[in-house]
Amino acid sequence: MRVKEPTKVLPEKAKRSKRPTIPHDEDSSDDIAVGFTCQHISHAVSVNHVKRAISENLWSVCSECLKERRFCDGQPVLPSDIWLCLKCGFQGCGKNSESQHSLKHFKSWRTELHCIIISLSTWIIWCYECDEKLSTHCNKKVLAQIVDFLQKHVSKTQTRLQEIGLDKTVPVLKKFKI
Image 1 (cartoon, rainbow, N blue to C red):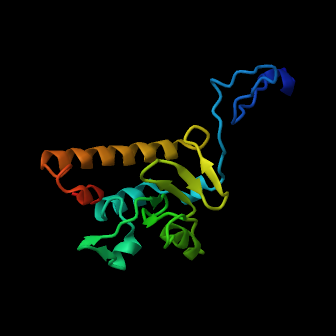
Image 2 (cartoon, rainbow, N blue to C red):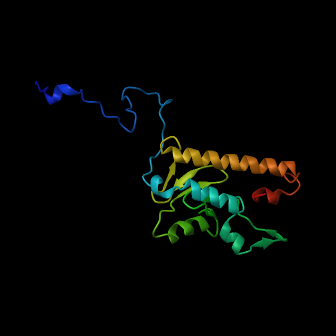
Image 3 (tube, one colour):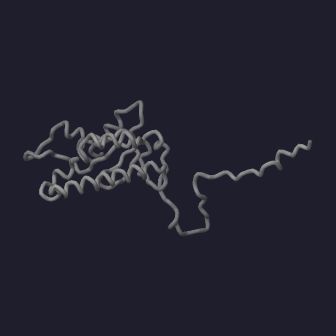
């Protein structure tokens, strides 16, 4: 019986690179996804926890501001800059607001990463650990999936408000889950 040389048995497969190679001589960046790749996504994003939290809580309302019961003229004072934690679904006011509840939420966790958040008004995704804006094109597809889910949720909520006639008559209720 004849034994083949190990190098001739199977041709060596080319290894796949995780990122497409970018030719250095091309000036056009039309087809190249530009953005920051975050290492925290696999540990700081939980689609199931976010979906559960969205179904159980008021939409686009800072949970902590609501607990503090801030009111003006009988209406709840609700910051417009609400960010959603992509680990647990916590909704908090942004770091430019007076209370900075989303930032405080991130800092309060020591055992789990709650560092990736999304703005519910602009759909910007941010990682507190990296201190960078994230792109759905340069990161795992879980980010694109969660953005798609959230945008569909907003669309359904707005449609329900329009159907019952609350979209224009009571603007404050647009922020709430119906």
